[in-house]
Length: 136
Image (cartoon, rainbow, N blue to C red; front, side):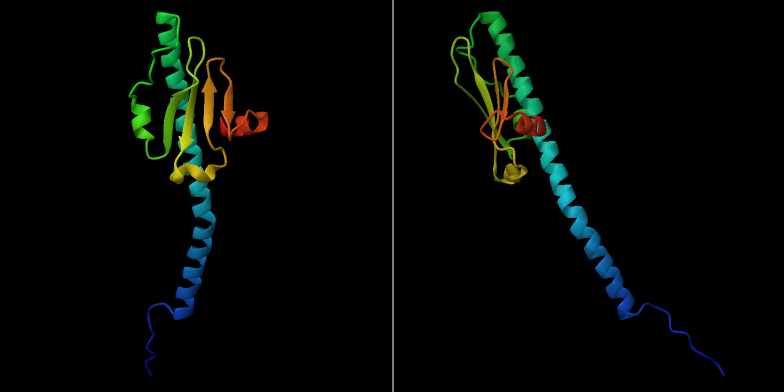
């Protein structure tokens, strides 16, 4: 007597494999999304610092922040889908750079990032130390 062995996988084995992949994906995707949001925020804070250095170089040359505009730097171009950078509160001795998140970046919980001429960092509309440390 000859016994034929059937080669292949059963439907139950396939469903178990699909369930395992689904569980792993449900764990991995939120972690990946949080990582992307954090890395974009880190890039935005680095860009804000680069822009503040530009402002300080201009102040050293002119002894005033008036008349200075944010340069068309590469970091602004790289992040234009995620953040909008602006210069406000500009006077002879003051300025503030803001990085406003767009809809793609809005879920990170840090909101608008700010930086002024004194080196004071802000996040989420305020200067709360715990929020600033988490967001910067």
